[in-house]
Image 1 (cartoon, one colour):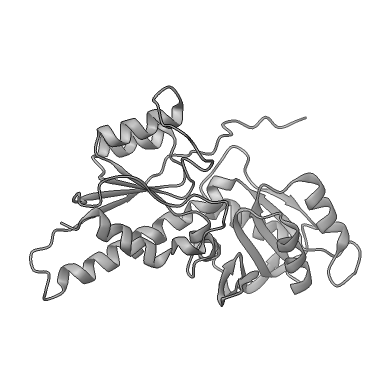
Image 2 (cartoon, one colour):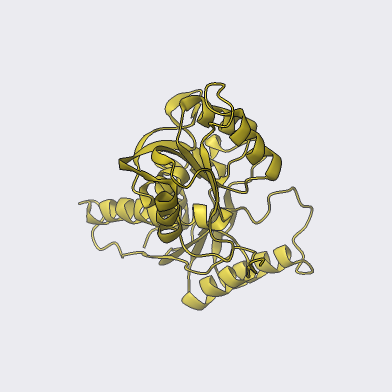
Length: 290
């Protein structure tokens, strides 16, 4: 069986830790690089329920998109929920690896998976990386044919895993939508919204849109035309990033299969991969107002 160091190397090659934002915390959190890997579980959040799933399934490695220890810590005592998670993972022999903003800008990465789920043909990043223009944050894509915003909103709602918040929409329901911008995770940064506007996108799908950012994006319009900004579709943060898990699992499985069938690697065992279907969106209910 492959060693943990080898599996980490494969994932690091696809989602290079050097691509992560300076404030981010990515890479191997715990685990013995010399340990064998038989099972790998992919999930968005390293919360207790996901740790339970990894332990119950007998995973040797848990790969999450969000970091467990984003801010610097001086200890991991089991007196906190994050400390308990680390202790439980180590006790049960489960390594933890995080691929966060490095997976966001990878090609293919988090937003490519979101675009594919919505059946968009990807054109390129919203904010290209300075060192590699084909890589970067967010994606522009096109539908095969234009459809009304109300229909496109239904497409988004059906394509993503359901959450209590559903899909919030801002814009004329009859607006034709074909040229679309997407960004997995929180995408209401000023640079992102400005780039989406400047490109003339019909709609923008992302998560965590705040009131003022959304209002200003709609009012600013496209090319200086007031009220002609892109329609906005706000989805759950977790749901927007969940499609990437399957892509990451395929990346790992494909590379391991290549190594397993190589003439220099006879008898190599098969690593099982699984994508967690646990809904770890923190919002659990929605009450419509009458």
